[in-house]
Image (cartoon, rainbow, N blue to C red; front, side, top):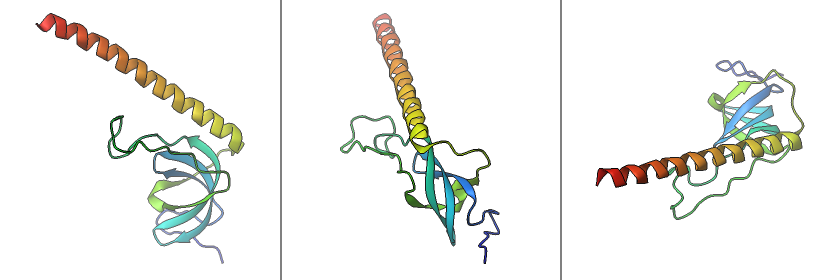
Length: 130
């Protein structure tokens, strides 16, 4: 008997894009359990963000969380609203993890450079405002 979720149209065996906290993955839908689905991770699309999710971009929190990407074939429960059918080819897990890690590092570097330039300009404006 094939399990199908009437609202999402997803069924067991489908390839899905899954959003888990701040990471995005390609996986196989293994089970449907009410509002949730059990997903087996096959590739990483976006590496999870580091730090406190409730205080984004704040380095001065009591606990700055390290978030690792979910492992190859790791199973995770995901709300169906955070699942979308995936139609493309599934990249190699190791390659997808490397690509996602590089993209996250590049984004953090860009943010760091943006903050440095903004700070420079604000310090200059502060001098002019006196």
